[in-house]
Length: 118
Image (cartoon, rainbow, N blue to C red):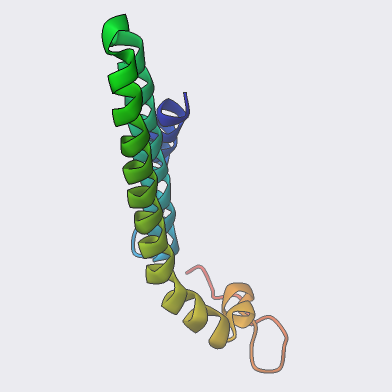
């Protein structure tokens, strides 16, 4: 269920016009895609348990424990990589007085004049 909802969120983000030039939007997209793939992997392992014959269940349980550990470690490394990749951007964003840029405030703390439309 989570992998299906994750894929819908990815499609929504990709098609709705999020600015891909902004570093935050592709980062969120990568984060959601990695969560979707992680849930898809766990779904695959659960589905395999359902189709393994009864005589091989004990063998599959041993194999499944190792696969769960490998999959969890791999997912953790991917998430850590995404977080580390975003940290320098967050430091620059906070350091450059982000509130002024977001609110478009001038140096005196008041809003700038709006630009004429024509």
